[in-house]
Image (cartoon, rainbow, N blue to C red; front, side, top):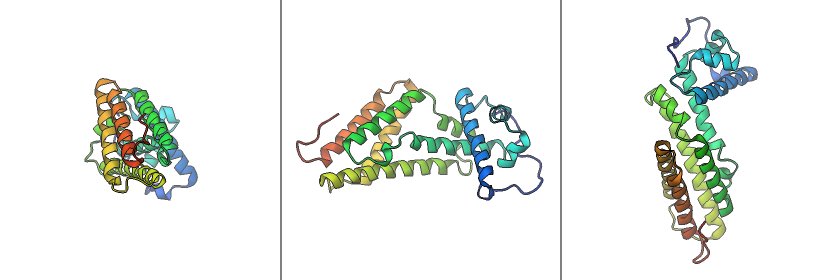
Length: 222
């Protein structure tokens, strides 16, 4: 994001996010969302703070009021927003994987999201710019994966409770394996621009679940 200073000259103590008023939080959110749009359109490496200010209609003093540590703090905020979007884009199905129909709908939503994203990854690009060693950066990814895996595990438990089968299935391990398969498929998509492996990973993962959670002969592969 250019070579702007990373912090403004000290003045009064800046408010933390928790100290912001409702209006202040809304303004900060608007800046983050606007920055995310610019970063997606132009790429992390070429965007400047001036680009963000122009898109969001903010001055430099206002920008540093909400992000006193400058560029890196703003990039982390955008990374957190992008991580939240990864999960939000999978709703409502990720939050209610109670039936195989919902699992299939969730599968379609995931594929559509990453096919639309193509061979670029906003979240990955942000971390390349910020650096995973930056305080808070790794925690964003860890929390994203934790929430994603827990949602998948909840869905597996919900289906198991409905069918009454698969009591010996290690739910957490299956959720972790399915998430890893998705990430592998996405990595290949980013390298090749093709979603074949992502589709195969999701189809196989759901088929394996149906085989182990349904009574013998009841599972119908997609």
